[in-house]
Length: 210
View 1 (cartoon, rainbow, N blue to C red):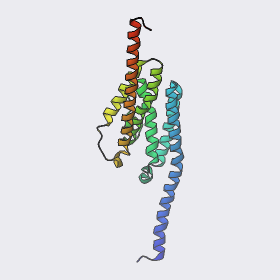
View 2: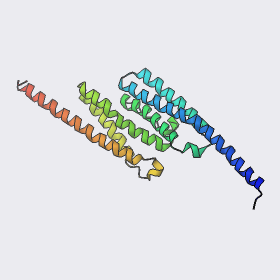
View 3: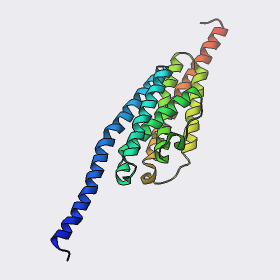
View 4: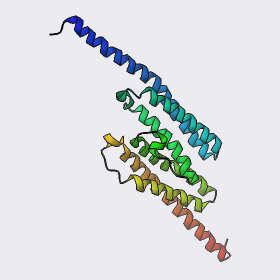
């Protein structure tokens, strides 16, 4: 049996490592909250069609994310606790929403500097977020634009639905895709209803009944 002093030395060494991990966690947690807050504000700016503010807020979100990633780089156990994944996911969502709405290429996980599962979930949530923008365009009478957005949502779902791994590996992608599928069906129904209404209106106008 190891003498008491030796046991205390082991404990002291472990505590030093735990102290380092705790300090990193305390620094990364608020940074991750700032990532999420700035990403959410960026998405709201996209909906307001304020591209400048959206880009600035996305850059702010990225800066906070890079700091959190750096702090946790040597501590994989803490990095995989969940809060960094959530921050990466929200940052991806902000970038993907802007890309999908602008019709540009969605940046991949390497370009955004995030883990694969976080990128997939962020992309799926970005597709769901398009519904709000799509409804705004429908209310503005932009039916063709709304259909383009629905097509983009479909593309995202089709790309991600082929992923078939346990939730433990994808951080719950399956649930996120289930939510996206429900959003897709509602959105498709909204556009179908609008198309039928437009056709009816045009038919009535052609007959001079409106």
